[in-house]
Length: 202
Image (cartoon, rainbow, N blue to C red; front, side, top):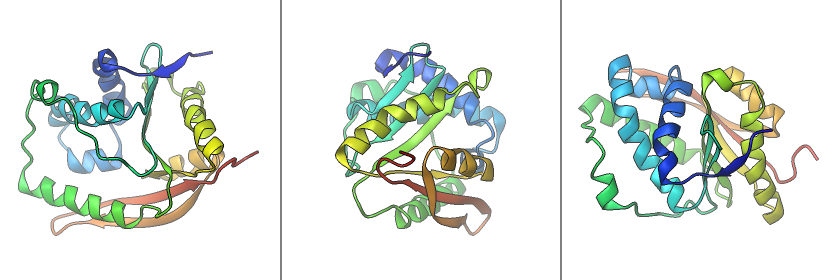
């Protein structure tokens, strides 16, 4: 059985590789970064900023070998500051106007569909392709399910494929809403917002 633990700064490089491979075909990320080389080149910088925000709230978990990770945002989605000195060592990502428009549209749609009640937000669940279908994602989610259940709080996530809707339903989530993301230049992904009530499945 894999050991699940909170991640730390030293894990970010390995976790970035895991998430890059796990999300190589993700509809949202590939809508934002459609070019293969650019996706790979920018993932470390983009992911590093996100991961450090999870670290700041102690809400990033991984397996010992970092082949599977779960990045959560605590109830209330607290604003956090990352270490500027560390952040400035990452390569700068300059976004063209079309990507900025897509990021804005995505953010607005996600915000409009976010549950108003306090909840744990599963921002990212990823397993390296070579280690998928071994129960690592379920083990990672269980850690926060127990925390959320103990506080009587739901968990929430967004996903973009029918297959993942089925996967998360199996783990107690139900579809709360669904929507399309579109911009002036492109029809983006279809998305589902899913909510898991406390003690679901018990």
